[in-house]
Length: 479
Image (cartoon, rainbow, N blue to C red):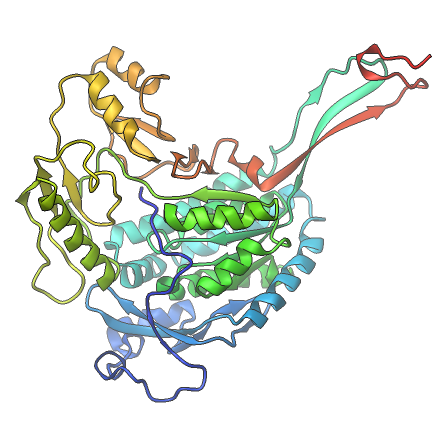
């Protein structure tokens, strides 16, 4: 499962706040897809020609208008008004006020709200999956599957809401109890990437919510319609339960909003999914204020094979694909299959296989978000394991073998150094029960299952003296 994004940037056509006629004749004079009969289902998600991209209990947005495009044909779908900095400021304040209500609700009751969100997503899974396919470019089954991931993590979080907690530890002092108390961090900012515009938010928000946190979401600008549609589903559940809508806030926007979230001390945890390059900037901004971050950055998986897939997300991605193919040739590689842009509407490219490159060629160590497979010959498992580990990213890896010794070598301390280590399955996809994330330049963050919930909480070690004495630890006595 890849995680690349220019999540703090914007790659889409925009207009100023007061502009009337569109200034890009070819694209903007086209009829919006949402107005065409075959896309009438978009309105079932509450979408319109122009949509408000801010939600904090009420819908609004005073920023610029952004048009999103279908990567299958590069036609405009609809427009979303982004958040201004004033919108952001107002939303953060409302979210923090909402936290005062949400944190007082018992965790199992919070789980019940998350369960209802999961059920609401189930009801819209077909058309929401279709929107993922339309705006992001995934094939339909992957779009629906991504919504299913959100549904699944809601189910997981419901059970987790009755299980989170710390241990009671033995105290060395008589008449004392030593316990670990876990409390919510407060406001969790979630910046997600274009390539997983639903699931990543689901992983973060469902677990963060049952832990007692409120969420502020900034999705990728190029998938703003998805962010709006998902938030509308969540908002209805909150409103039906007479809860503050700002528990799950939304501020669609670009680099200005993302930077504000990273620098804002009121954002107690920032979960960022995107490129390693931008992730470094985010990490520095958060660390400068001694904040907490959960980074899910680039991957460069050892096995990446695309057979059935949709278009690349943007024209820029097509240019990056062509650039990578040319760079591979310059470094001594041979394109044995593919390597070209398809002669058809949209951002389609051929699946590409390259041989003849050195294992440490610079292009091999560069994550290109495109269907390019580099093939290498190796002498033994020690050599190829080292090649796997020499890549700076450490997200996912896989080996295909029936040799038990090789399997456990691969899983062990001298095997793969990735966060996800697979045997006899591809590197794409992951079950929600295990923590998802990677090592090294992938950022070290963990989302979804296992004990990932701890990242959304703060831990206090508490000592309670219920005796009549006042002994000190380590047997210290002041005499």
